[in-house]
Image: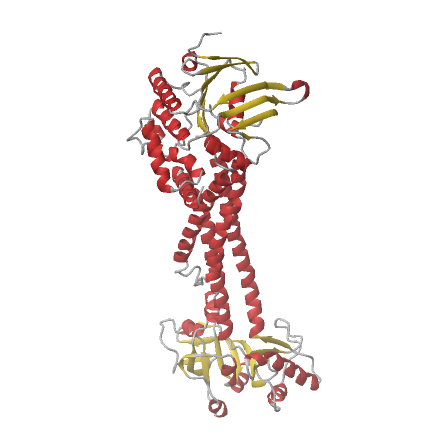
Length: 235
Length: 397
């Protein structure tokens, strides 16, 4: 985990699709500072720009203008290879549909980010086992995704997201495909990770998920409409 | 991604689509196997042609009169021509000279009959043509001088006249009602077996005087067979012979040497070989296109996985290498199996030809199979590596 006090900083980030009259702004000047160790939820109605923000934060897409800094490093005009390396070391993705590689075991899936980080075999296995244990999947290492329940698959995905000790965990509707018990399991793991000092960003449209975060950012029409802290007085 | 991890990932995904992988491997196997086998058959045919030509006598030159075009004998040789060639000045490249009269005749032995070719010549003819006996002896100068009615027949004629398989040596055959004692039978040559299988009629050889006195009548020689002092001297012998004919004021005759036979047969064989090789090469190309096709399908099916791998930090080179390696895995396994199949197939004669596998062909085919994987796998791999991760992750959601 990073020593920098600010995990992510977005300044006047725009994302436009198309050109001229038909141009659409998915992000219309977003300013957002996420301190290290924060547990943040991003909410908003569909079309508010949540997905576009996720893609920019995840370095899967580049802003049309504005700047993004991750752990003090500006992410723009970088080579495809550099961006891949940032995704590998700074970002831990958790997707709504789990997105495990079906041909790999739970252990293999968790090892994958370390494979791309060129971590040695022994260390890889050790860290992957530790991560699986951390999400309560001890003993399921050799199971393939189709032999696991949805909740278990999502916990494998979380183990995969944390195993490279990224700057932040970026979860896109992580509980969207889960029943309430599995949702509770995953949210508890996020709280534990946050308790251990991890930066967690959850993009969701479920209020009960957002309610578990420290701070909630509400998006509307491509902008940050407002931001509030849970547990503090509601605005 | 380190190399070992790449290989493991590639093999795992090939196993994941086992049926498809096996079918693609089969395509490459057929391609590589047929290249090696067909080139080996070509080599075997070349070898066979060389042996056939060698069996004719590598130094032999057959001289036909000028204008002798396929039987229309507008000119001919005389014995004086033969004597001029045989006069053997010092340093001549011409070694032996045998006059030849030829024709066809009817031969009978018991109830069997045949219409063989007749060759009337001298004992030197056998040396010139490198003839080998399977039984008995050649006729000799003594036979000629003492007017013996003897003949040497070839294996085809022996089979025709003595169908029970008994030896013709010591038996008498009737040629145009003249009894001839068979003193020798020639060993079958590759050429005989070739003509024999095409319904050849066989040949018998008898002393020149005997043939002229009884069968053809005394007139001009049909041709002259001569041998050069060594195979390397064939061309010199030809030009010396041409000079002798020129000195005698005769038109330049036509020469036919075993080299030319080699060229004629070799040329036919070569064009056949290259035809076979092209067909094999096409099947290898088809195998390669099969690899591309399967890899494109694989990439398309795994767009989601590609998106996930990108999100987890797979660089473009890692991703491309993975797919190139998968393609190479398919083609290398296919190539190895192709080498094995060809190795087995070429243990047996194919169409009467014993294939000859040479190391260079195997190395070429093996190298080609690797190249096919890399070449035909690159396009799908680059396509995968260039994929937009946002779009890739959205597929199938």
